[in-house]
Length: 245
Length: 221
Image (cartoon, rainbow over all chains, first blue to last red; front, top):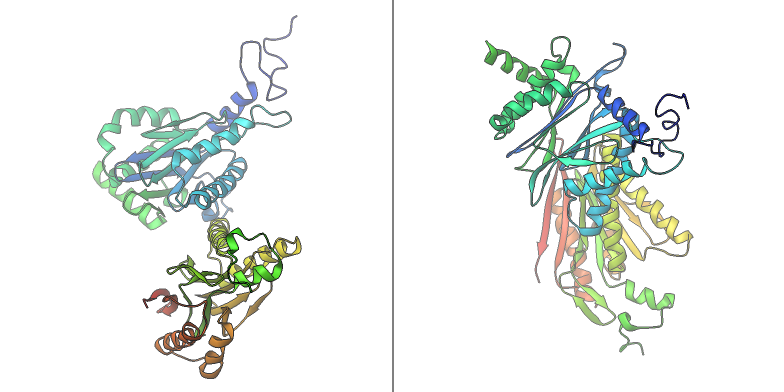
């Protein structure tokens, strides 16, 4: 009678509170909000993924910290939240992409793959004895028919298509920026990459270190994923500095 | 007499019967100085009937590995598709390319597992390619056996073609000589084996300044 409102409804993840909320799902979303920032941008020339890395200690091998994962030749995901949870979804996504390829003899569409990942996430908000995935994914790729595609999934299993998306701790600031500038950046990959880097710069505490940023691009021309190395990224950072001066 | 039976509508599914269906093909693979190649004919047969004049029996599974198939067409197609996907997943999970040995061993594992459960993949396979360890040819049987060879042939023309290879093969052949020998050995089966014919397809993999290059062979007849 005197218990605080909602007490007990966050014990099992699959139990509704009286006002229709799933607390465990909301906590999972909270875990994503505390994660490292990831950005996805769709342009007419292809898709861009850019993420920030965070190290608990400087002893970690920087190149071993990965937040962008290839799913197939033409699709990649960027993650924010619990990295370990993300790895499980990435593994399943890779297998699903190949199952589709074998079954239909064509590459999976970005939306179909997103749907399959979202179905797994949804199942973990409904079954007993499990907890939701504490991770959001930005799924970027180039379809054979529809061209560049960008989606974002939440721990609840819902997903939407985006022109530009951000997840992780820097989201509020970056989304505000992207909403203002998107119409200007939607044309070329080059512009999109610079916008993504600038956004990361804005939400990082100190100067942008090329080793602490990961950038991957899927171009419409060849439908192939390409990672940028730290020299490429360093050059881009210099380019931004020049423009600002 | 077993002429009028159409294998598609045949109720007699004895092993002997399946063996007869299996054997219409000749495929061969060989290693040479800086590469490996695999070639096969284009005829798909059902008993004495030529079911296809342009069957694809040499498949590329990645930039440096080719598969030659003989036996059940459906089994072979499914197995090649499966292998292609498994190798892609291997690359994504390990961040390095699967070697030819990995491709061969994986196939042997899959095929032996099925054989042990009394549902064999009804195929003979050649795995040929070039990786950082050099050039390789593997031969696989439907029981899941695998062997590492310098040259080998599969299918109904095996004995005819392997005779030619046995006589003329040398390990240090250059690419053109290897290609000529492979085609000569295959043409022997084209000429003398009823279930082999209608042309030749092939893949040649060779190292050119640390890069693996692929060359295709297509001979119409």
